[in-house]
Length: 113
Length: 115
Image (cartoon, rainbow over all chains, first blue to last red; front, side):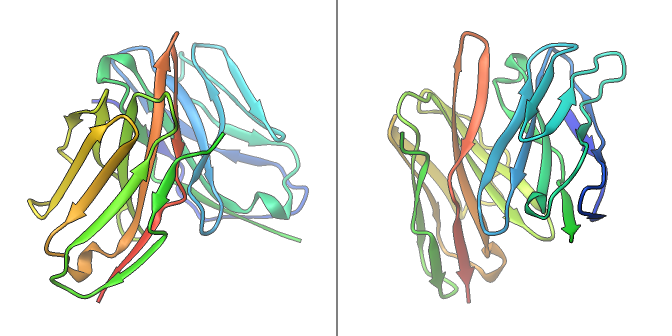
């Protein structure tokens, strides 16, 4: 079945460091891919998405490129800030699975000043 | 636009009591999802609806859990009787599949504590 695997955390970085959170997926159809972010005490918020191969999603300095050949959707940011501290979830959704979303286990990021 | 609305935001109850969580999805959305989040198990999909019809309830842990969606603007998740291991944050999310777009928007969650 469809699934998402993301790198385990927690990840701790200094401010202005580069961030990469790996995400790979398994899907029988042609999924859309998403990154969600969850700040402490809040629900998940959509950070960015890509709906087809080679699409790049971007938002708030974060980027992820839909790589069909490597079945990956890694999240990157060139310079993280303390305010980026949160849990990040990779997810996929496909029409052939009734638009159900499959979430990764989440990666906790802490950015220290 | 109002986002997904959940109530209550916090619920503390005693073991054996009935708990009802409520969700109002975003207007115009045709899919609704109930999730449970705990430190031990992460984010788990409990059940989801398309056009008010339950599509997959395989994530509902036990018969003590039930969910309804009587109309497009309201859903409930009921636990009866509640147990301490049900303590978690319960999220409702809604989405709309239109023109190939497919996104999910989460509510703020209900933090349930069963004593």
